Structures are given as structure tokens and as C-alpha cells.
Length: 330
Ligand code: ATP
Ligand code: MG
Image (cartoon, rainbow, N blue to C red; front, side, top):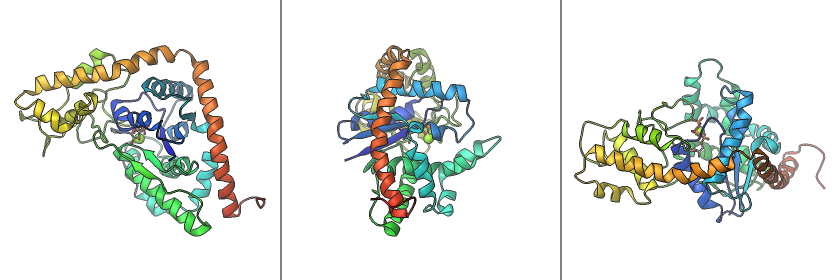
């Protein structure tokens, strides 16, 4: 069972990334053979970016992932741009990707609507690069948040089309979306997902936020005019906090509802804030220890890239051979 997932080094990682994705990465590293996790700097340049900050963000993200529990000795952790096979495969897969399918992608619609200057072709092409990321490793499982369901469907379609046209070569990957916490919502706008691109500042809890900041953000979360700590119609804000507490407190949404039956929103929010602070505290502490040693982070990423290249290189040779690209394989 091969596991692959990618995470962007855009800005700081937030609680949605942690609960929807990073938590699953850690869980997958002993199931995956191997588990491969990629810091996708090439995806980060599909929206405006600062070249100086991008490198720093890769180190921040690597340190967060290791602090969260990824062990570069037990998984393959690397930077996307270090393995050129991803960009090469993107072009081959582009030949099999329907323009109409890319046009239907929700993420493109949402992110392009938020761009004030350039809507880049890269943003439109994002899902093809993402398909290349996964298919290059013949991964069986892709741990992601709910927002990536459509992109995983598309990569399955691309793999299927490739195999039908050129013979069984690529693996159609399955998404792995958590049952609880697959879509953590913005605390100030509980109808939109907590996001790096286009989220609200007060509604986004960062993994590295100070405890006081976490508490302030959770306590000022938008809820509803009711009083019941229950999920339901018009209660997106409360439902979101219930999910967050279920994950951070290692329980279930049903249990949270029953624990807070009869409690007011104030007490409930206080409990959520406390649980999130405790949940993130050890990660923040380890991050502070790991982040200063950029040499060690670069070494870990370089070792990961070498292992990744060995796998992706094999797939690329097969793909080129099957497609009739370059000289015949022997
Ligand atoms: P952007 O808004 O720029 O796309 P992002 O916040 O979605 O950034 P990514 O690096 O694109 O961050 O996503 C990394 C992983 O986190 C993906 O698997 C994605 O599905 C997951 N994820 C992102 N936001 C959430 C969320 N609000 N709830 C649960 N999972 C999420
Ligand atoms: Mg995203």
C-alpha cells in the first residue's frame, strides 16, 4: 500500500490542514509502504508569491510536519521541485486531460474569483500537476481533506484514460478523507472552509498561534442565535466547533453533543479553546526546537528527494516508453 499526499508551503499551516491532512499523514506513515509526503512548492506558484518567502515557507512547513510526528526515517518527506519528474509527467498527462474537466474544478472557480491581478494558466493546470504528483508514485491512497475529492476523482480519470490508451501502467488512487474534520470551516464564516487563500484572519487558527490567540479566535467564532450545542440546519458554526472538539479531544461529535447538553455557548467555546490549545501545544514546542536548524531540514528534504526520485524515475521510464516518447526502452 503506497500512500502519497502533498501540502502547500503557502503561508502558515492552519487547523484545517492539521485536522484534515497532517493528522492523517502521521497515522499513515506506518501503514504506507512507503508513505510519501511532498511539500508542493510548485503548486504554491499558481497564485502570487514572494520568491524570498517561498523558501522560508518550505522550511516552516517541513518543520511543522516533523513536529507533528512525521519521521523522515519512516516516511519519504521531500520538496516537490527537487524531483523534476513531477513537471515532466505533468506535460505527458496534459495530453490525456480534458480541458472541459479542468473547467469544472471547484477549486479553480473559487481561487480564480479571488485573484485581483493575474489568473494564471498554472492555477487552471494545478490539478494536472497534482495528478502527476500522485501517479508518479503509483500511490494507492491519497489522504486529503474534503476539498480535494474532485481533484482525486480527476487523477483517477487521467490514470484510467492512460491505461486504456497505452496499457496498464498507472494506479488509480483512492482518496482517504477523514470521517470527522474533513472540512474545518472558517470560524468567522462557517460556510467557507478554513483556507490559506482567501480565509479571514480572525477565523483561521494557525498551528503556530500563541495560546491566547487561539483562545481569542475560538471564543469569537460566529455561531447562531440558538442555545443548543447540536449540529443541524443553520448551525454550521456550532457544528464546526463540535467537530474540532471531537478531534482535539479524541472523542466523537455525538459524545460532544451529549457532554454539552444544556451548556451555554460560552462554556462550550471555552472548552473548545482549551482543547485546541492543548492539541497544538506539543507541535508548537517541537517546531521551536526544529525550525532553527535549516541545515538539518535541508538534509532531511534532500534525502527524501533522492528516495522519491528513484520511484518516480521508474514510472517516468514506463510512461515515456508506453507513450512513444524518446528512444525505445531496452
Ligand atoms: P489554499 O487555500 O491555498 O489551497 P489550503 O489551506 O487548502 O491552501 P493546502 O496545502 O492546499 O492548504 O492543503 C493541504 C491539505 O489540507 C489538503 O489535503 C487539503 O484537503 C487539506 N485542507 C485544507 N483546508 C482544509 C480544511 N479547512 N479542512 C480540512 N482539510 C483541509
Ligand atoms: Mg488547498
